[in-house]
Image (cartoon, rainbow, N blue to C red; front, side, top):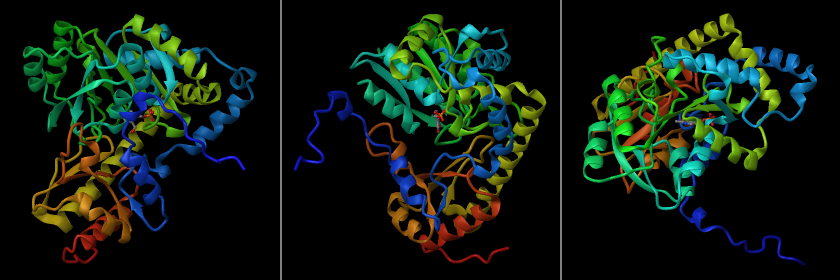
Length: 401
Ligand SMILES: Cc1ncc(COP(=O)(O)O)c(C=O)c1O
């Protein structure tokens, strides 16, 4: 009988790629008895399934929508995205200025592959979006961590490192409603970052899937509005539906051409059907505007329910910055509790979250913090989740109100 799993020689670059603790955790939190605050999943109840179904039916009737498409993406979608992105940037964009990818994760991977050689320095935020760490590890980059505070990436720390000689190829930032901290890069830091890119010749990767989820409806002005050495990544995942796997990038033309060439190697083209649906939904301005407004209102309600419940059950034992958009609240224990130690008991009590250590860009850090996603569950379940978390932590029960 042949060995069912013979040894396979894997590439050297794979050795440096850490598995995502979050993706591993998702298997545990998928249990029906667990309320998950762990994944960065938009609430299924907030996804526009009826509108997607209608667009899918229309698309499927079009022979072109079940055929291969252009590598750079469906022209109709690129035109809509050029209009949407151009409005945010405050300058007109053409369809040729946009490449559509399979989620913004693919855009990140293709940008890294297009620009990095093994050993190239890349600046990441700390704590960082884990998907970015994995991409840069796979590219063999030398990671340099810059801290994130309440105003987003500490651009003054980056400036000091650059002045001391650091010469990164890329600087990655989740500029708005950061994953995992929820922080938004302050306006003056945005301008300063774009200025540093021009001065030192690096490329900023502005990873922005959450910008349009500002609770006050005012999407922050992108870093890319302040300079030309910025590649902007966008996504339909958090504003329409993750299953569409529609992301996009805009940026310097030679980079877009390189990404398109690499995408030919990767998947020839994205799903024409999914892109048709995304184009239909994004082009339906009255519907999309109303949908976004309802989504932001629901997310604001969920964020408030979560932070109220945290305050009720944990009092001063936890600190956080109230979310002003996006999907995440980053809370830190002040009493020495380590969330990684709390997690097994929490899962037993039926609640999941991600310990801060999972987002550490360098060695063991963020040991007292955890990321709570408020987007996936309605307020009543968030309140139940926090009651369970408090019970797991041995905190006195607070009667339900
Ligand atoms: C900061 C950030 N970038 C990129 C992604 C990937 O999104 P997608 O590939 O679904 O567009 C995520 C997903 O959670 C994210 O948080």
